[in-house]
Length: 119
Image 1 (cartoon, rainbow, N blue to C red):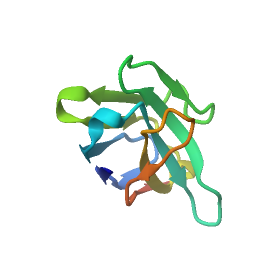
Image 2 (cartoon, one colour):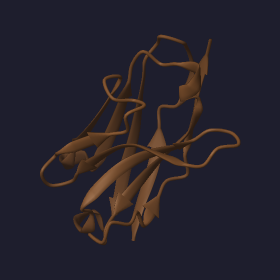
Image 3 (cartoon, rainbow, N blue to C red):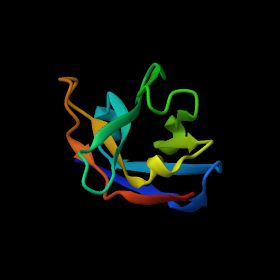
Image 4 (spheres, rainbow, N blue to C red):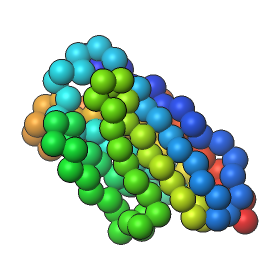
């Protein structure tokens, strides 16, 4: 089992910045990649960013590319999502996820943290 706990959400004005954290615990040695997803009210959950746990390669959704940076600290088993130039449409619950299967699925999820961007 892998347990994920997000933190860092909150209320920020448009144009501002926020950094989310996700701490992993448990069988973290099984993690292949980690990702951030978000779900806005009335919308489906969507992918935001991902990172390879071992190599550190990263990839982003087009909607956030250039404004968001995902990073990791393997020593702390923590990933971060630095979000800049926030827009009202970034308002959502942000979820951290881990893939511990190497089969392309996200099998562990955090409880989510709310990000609200006021315009």
